[in-house]
Image (cartoon, rainbow, N blue to C red):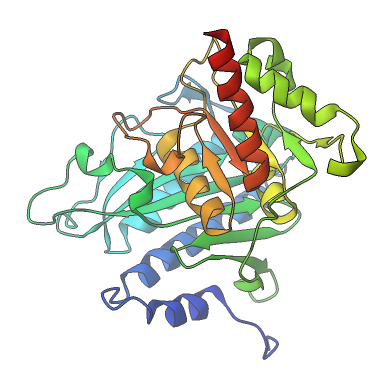
Length: 338
């Protein structure tokens, strides 16, 4: 029997749903579908080395990247589960060129944006990977949904979260009332509340960035990276450099312990590399709800206008004081250059 003090994800969502007068159980059903799909993907991730689901699938996604076999499996699993929830009219996925319109659900009010397996380049080396999801409400359900219905600003998200498949499997989410984390208890196959009311420290001791691209970064970002490495007892510098190449892993660590994650624009990727709808918006919603900050370098991520389902954006996200200083250095350098 589970310990009497445990609170499952389903119990928690039902309790929170009472705070939304128009929720009507819809979010509970969506989260049940996300939870089921997460358990299936977690099972496949755990046995990846034992069966033929590692390596490339032999195709590429809409961004021209090789799709890993688990990428395709995870995409199919989440789309199938969410399609059966009866609450979702459209699913947009990082792995699909076009939106998936759910037959028979044309009048349902929710849209899901999902990155089924973030950090999939790490699959073959057994590093942490995860799933990122975001929920939007359609402005009107009186007509058939369109791709344009999906292109909303991040500030209009109803909920966002991620599942990280690491040393333990965790689901972290927000509905705009703070951030809570749930760890999968394998013995009862339930996500149980383990990290209530997560608050990111205003300052951290870690910076996360691919320094291999240092020479291609804007001068202001190079200045900030140099600042992070300078010895200064008053500000506890130098900071530690931590970068695994999996947004979800780097973000999760910084969310719990404090830090900044950066993916600047470069000459090769002038609009940044991470996807606005599938990565930047959901993580920005989560970090703001935890007391942190997320910026494009020019403004708030959640205010960025979406003009393409697969558009990219630069991102600076994490502890508020660190992000603010980083963005200030970026902009000051740009003014000086001009």
